[in-house]
Image 1 (spheres, rainbow, N blue to C red):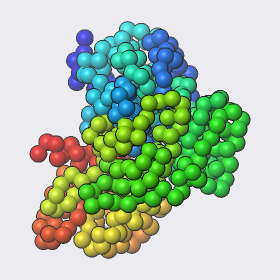
Image 2: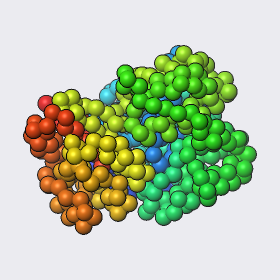
Image 3: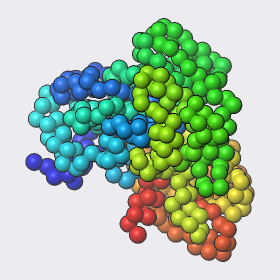
Image 4: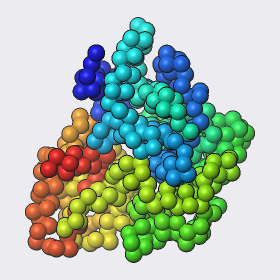
Length: 433
């Protein structure tokens, strides 16, 4: 029998992993995951689920819904991706990661049951692992985040009680399409017959894509950006995002990035929909869950302050929609800001560079994954867009360079991001120091 380290090595080396190699690991279609789930008795068919998709904010939304249901006394499974430090972050019950021996036992069962020719991807295998663990953990509900897209995503073999689509932005175009309407059509694929759906941000042709898909499925639809357009959030003195009035009364949100002001409308609308479905979401449970979302679910990397004196903040925002808001938030720091940036090699940087604040200093780096764009190439492409900075070859080295520069200015702010993998490297560096 394999030990845990051997199990993780097997998952990373024997199953194609999008996190590491990108598009080559993407396996559109549900036949393999359905076959795999059947080997384990189709656990997804015996789970109550909430399905969360969209381009940006789906991880924050999934964690927030889970936190509020935990605060309501429910036993909640949470499946998200990617992980930042530990593979087991992907699969949690009431915030607790799946035990190592359960990961190993599942993979051993898979190897014993897998018929010849069945070669699931990393994500297909971990999706079924999550369903299996949630069923055996006797969760009351499982919050399932879509991996990529929706229609052909491995998670789309569930029949949820509520579907949530946060927003649409230009990302993963090679897999999902090159227009917002095409991407919306793929993400609308999680809409199921008769299952209520909440859409966070939408407009124009994208809205019509969702409306049409819901009408065809007979799925009641709510648009959060219509219902909660007047729900304003502002940063409070105690460092929370505060809302004076909502269907659940005054709220304080532990996530404070600029994007969370929009996400919160989606989250509140989804929570209201769940309460109407009979979920025991009291005002107190929602208030407590939103105020403790990071603490109760283990969420990391969302406008996360990881160091003081100097201030070091990281964020996993990595596409045009994310940087539209990140850029505005970072611009407030002016020339006090040093940004440590790295991206993956398939990212459309032409739509991101215009959002980078021009007064900041930059250190370009590379995350420790094969998909990472070389730092020298990133620096060259940034210079062509009028953004210049130095080059380092690891996130740890880049952080050290930024900290040395910050010693000259007690008001300095360091931002680390551009890619989920850059943030993952940062958190690993800090954990090991």
